[in-house]
Image (tube, rainbow, N blue to C red; front, side, top):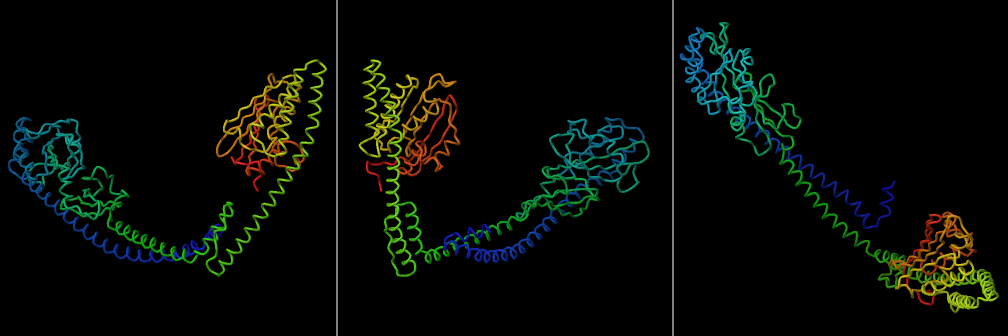
Length: 576
């Protein structure tokens, strides 16, 4: 419902654009989906063929390397030299040093059988290690030197990659070959004659991994690895966890080595980079088509709705009060007639606004006169009585001073019958009023004024400050009577130039302001016939338009009336 309302409120050209865009986008979407589906199928077919070819190449490479290793194993295990060595070991004819020396030739032949073999050594049930003279054990606690790990093996076995005991920084794949007395099988297995011995070949893990991944495809990010039939990882990149990693698609192929499989792990994230590029390309083309189509649709709709632009500009300028009737109809169609009607209506409205302003001005001028007549007699009588008392008491100087101050107050208040005055004159009137009241109140209230120099001659309606001072004295200080908690009564007037606005702040330290009642006095018509805040607010509003009147109150400390209005330059003649 909200969407329908929003669309209904749009301009015609945008409505046309919104209605046409879905059709254009749907057409582009259909074309994109068709292209993506067709070319994705072709690419996936090509990618599958590439993966299968790579898997075959990797499997053949491993089988070839395994045949080299296996040939070396058969050569060493089936040699008469090793049979004699084992027989002497069973008979107890060899010491460790002699056996170490006798095994150097089989160790060397086994190590040279394949470039992937980094080390070869023999391990017996007594925990003795027989390695090549050039191979120094750097990690004597390596699990690869623990015979109990191999004693249950009954065939040639691949173990998972781990650190080499000869070079802990190198990762190797151990191949364990158990040996026994000659003639038991093609591969020598353990016998129950009290002597156990196993030959271990260490394949260079990095070299094997590089061999298997020589023919990596550019179609996807992938790696080859080895695992045993029981699921144990033999060779795997260190940054990938296990076979069932959800981030990889794994396919496998058996190898020539019994119980060992080769697998291809393909990264799901980068499996189809060309497919992603295809999707991006199609979407880019679709976006370009939509953008160009939108521009074309917008141009056509703008041409169709152009006659309404002048109408919209007219209405906006009328709303901002800056229309100069500079729009004339070019054609005699419906829009032309509407422009003529708006021009005529504008003239009528301006005449009515001028009449209303004049009436409002006269009304507030009349109201101000009535209010002045209500205020001045009481204030005049009290002032004259004060002057009389000073004369009777012989204080002629004070009486003369009061007469001068009272004359200044009346001169500012009457202002030759003008409704407007300046801030400088207002301050003089407020100061005169305060001086008279302080004489009557025995100088109990301190009075301060602060006026920006740039505002001295700024024109405002008269009698703005004096009523607020009167309210402070009457309600804040109980007409000058002693008020509990107030030691030094004071009233401060501050007038600031906060361009583009002006701020008047009247502050006292009296009993406090009932903010709710004060706000009601400003907004409620009930206070219309009373002197005070509403009168000040309405007169400022009449001349300056937008006026804000705010109140803050901390009793016996700081109570403020804050008035803010636009800095509009007035003349002594009210602008109609």
